[in-house]
Length: 603
Image 1 (cartoon, rainbow, N blue to C red):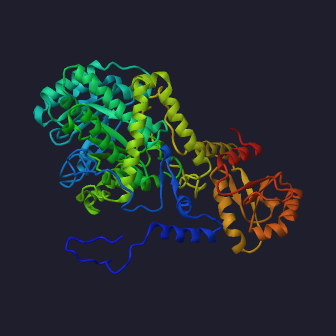
Image 2: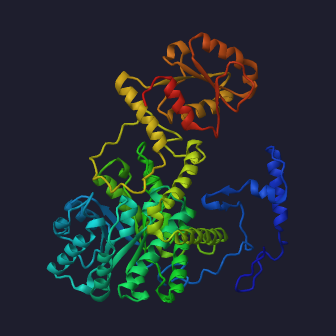
């Protein structure tokens, strides 16, 4: 389309507008060469990508893909940010998480770029009585403190307030969040938690501590249970609305109640979905506050955490890349505070190096990439605006479903919410098993000879409620079987890759098969003969043309040499003697599990 600049100069004025249909015809021509005979909208649909929540990412977005006006930063509906200045003044709040009473680690973080602390207190964390010792040397009027204390919230909050008083911190100078989240605690543990102490803390903060918030609306339990982006949004809205009801019944007005809430979301390595989710979250909460009669109180304060679900235990170094993309998305999405989980988070207690890399991820994006200097950098993108709108509608619908069930507490206690999340995770598990959603270093490009990264045990997280899932869990179970076999026998289970023909004919499928079986801890052998390999199964790897000529005879030779099971790398066909096929899109987890079973590798 032709766009006129403000000065009236038509840079594209001599070029005719290109109709969408012309682009679709060109797409159809390219697809026809690959064997897909589709036309018009079907050609465009063939290049679309299915997302969760019934959404689809199309290959092309134009000005005709209308979305509601996002407004301006700092003004309703707050899509472009909760503050007019965004994070341009100094970047987002770099918030580091600590689960043990390690004063040196706390001070080390604050001296090297961290701007606030997120402390797990009580069960699975720091004892409330140890808060004063952990915070010794911390400038509490400069470094906000955020608590996550579960059932111990009241005692932890009172102890933190006592420390403020003892250190001479003025009440108006105290910053942070006392972390009351009774519904989040119930989601994590399955145990009910009284909301009255949270309401009392909210009244205290509203009246005496203007820089402190009392409650956290934590959407991580639902994300970590396998929920989609829309389900995470819907659960956060339902939690926020439940807290508004509790606080207004306790005597706060709606504006005061909104000011007591901080929202916590996950950031994944799907950068555009994360950006759209954070923008949609602000829009949805603005709608809630408007419906409650306080439109100007709808600026959502967002604390974003890099996703624990995406963190892997194998090849954990790749987690640095995942966390960098997630942090970039959180910053571009307008997060107020960002916690980057260390790359060894899934292995135990993070060491000093991992914490340094975590905090420096934000520092580099803020100070060197200058990501925070532009407010809402993704705003105006037809794709991002449309995805924000679609995700907001999907999140709102899930919120309405929860409300129809009687609210979040009722949905948790009835099991309906857990079933919804499990259904979403089951569908995603299928994509992970088929490697439609690849995991670098785990399901794709695994390295069997890697030295394990060992960390001290971290405190056990709260459990008993919604499950905590990980993308790598199915492959991790397979690799654990292989490791146990290695420890017991001195060698890993092996499979022989029989390459037919020249390298040009077999390299692609040989590489494919090698990656596939290593994802299950099965060592591929490519040198020597089958008898020399020590394997009991084999995979034919070559081109379709050579399969037609030599597959049958090669299978017979392999079985005569002792192969009990022969795979062929490629789409299923008519090849006598072949027992099974491995190909892009096959159920890798099922194939690998069955193979280990046949090889006698213990479960």
